[in-house]
Image (cartoon, rainbow, N blue to C red; front, side, top):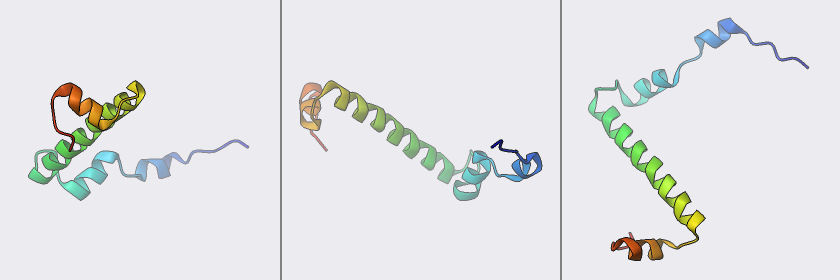
Length: 71
């Protein structure tokens, strides 16, 4: 079965930017900057977690290797 895309309906859908502005404000607002900072921190934490798991080491082993406390 072939799917038909309704371009008019598609044009009315909100963009990601629209949704972010509605929830967190414009790009230059304090709340949006805080959201962006938290989202970047989460993103990099996920990359680190996946790399740690791929290396087969625990959180404690990673903390010991870099000389930090496990938090």
